[in-house]
Amino acid sequence: MEDPDPPPFSTPRDPSYRQADIGLPGRFPYTRGVQPTMYRGRPWTMRQYAGFGTAAESNRRYRYLLDRGVMGLSVAFDLPTQIGYDSDHPLAQGEVGRVGVAIDSLDDMTTLFDSIPLDRVSTSMTINATALILLAMYVAAGRRQGVDAGQLSGTLQNDILKEYVARGTYIYPPRPSLRIVTDIVAFCARTMPQWNPISISGYHIREAGSTATQEIAFTLADGIAYVDACIAAGLDVNVFAPRLSFFFNAHNDFLEEIAKFRAARRLWARIMRDRFGATNPRAQQLRFHTQTAGSTLTAQQPDNNIVRVALQALSAVLGGTQSLHCNGKDEALALPTEQNAATALRTQQILLHESGVANAVDPVGGSYTIETRTNAIEAEASALLDRIEALGGTLAAIETGYIQREIRESAYRAQQAIDSGAAVVVGVNKYTDEAAASGVQVFSLDPEMEQEQIGRLRALRSSRSEQAWRQSLDAVALAARGGDNLVPPVIAAVEQRATVGEIADTLRRIFGEYQGAD
Image (cartoon, rainbow, N blue to C red; front, side):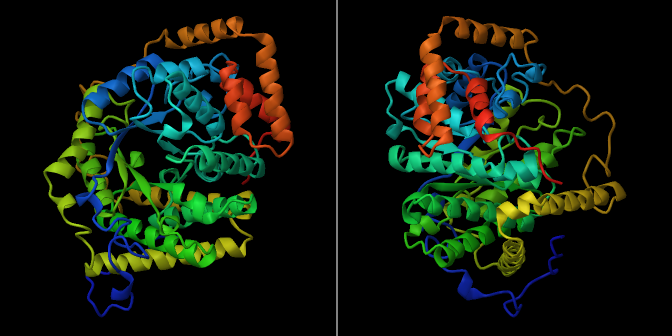
């Protein structure tokens, strides 16, 4: 499906303009934001997504960003770490440290956060199939710093359902994967009160080619599946739901993006109250992180990306985001350089301190255009959610390939529009300049990095206690076959220096591997 074209202008007489739905900031259905004072009371958290090469290299980048005013860290992991392979696995060759940091063991995680106080710095980790293992390593790294799990704050992405429809970095079939998610949610509810155990992610759904409406509908459909699974596991919705968070894309259509965020917040509040009976206001609120759209960045005329990112970031702020990452201008070419990462951070700081948008609570509230488009997106997303329910729910829609096909079709139509010139991309299909990208300095990785990482991994294996290591993996297997929560035995295993790949393989033998659906 395609998002409908908006009207050229709106008035109070438009059928979809409903003043009653706007409400007040901090009040149900939270159209105008989850806090009464929004950024006047507390600014959004400025995060910069970073990670590359080895843990030591990424640690240096984190400390650089913290010194320049980043409020929280956001960790990118390399592909082998994301899909549960150690750096010396044959399938990891050439991918170690390329799109994120290589983490094989607790020693790597400890190095990653060296001299960064985990009781004072909030950390977001973009990890899904191996989220269980990386959370365990983070808890154990905290212990090495003398920080209890209850003092740790941050967010684990842990959104495996969107992997099946948008990214593909899954390992196990959907149903055992859902069991892992609920184990993490249950553990965090008991042990880590400041930690968000899941960030339900529309970002990658949009990057895969969905429309704004599909991004909202498919993300909330995943959220419904997680809430259903947690309730089925015996958890209280008013206890666990306040720690659910969301992750959205900020794309190019400035007004549509603002409306999208507002529609998502209102729709989720009604789902939580009316479908799940949540009475705790915090359990009804959709709190979200936003990242500017990587898929909109161009290798041609990369300086233009600074403007794109600034507009996308402004839409997220006007839409009421709780935290924000701005992409570097060079990310269509390579990992961002330190200078371009700093410029991306400065973009947020200028928005907060110089633009004045944070001084008013929901400054776009009541705009005829914004409210009409908010209502239209909510109605279209609700219709898609009804379609998913008619198919048997989110898991059925994934297993039959329905959601995947809808995203592919939207991506195809969007590319056709660019190829035909119907959608203008400045510097790509209009106002082109062949020389514009020349002379751009790009980030490069140390060519010796992969072998050095493999060397450290093999040294770790040779120095650990074989008996304690084996017993710890046996305990993980026992919990996986039974019904015990998986998080405690995995923490014990990483403390016995079991690696990401070894723990993932233990679970592979029990849960199997997912082969995908058309």
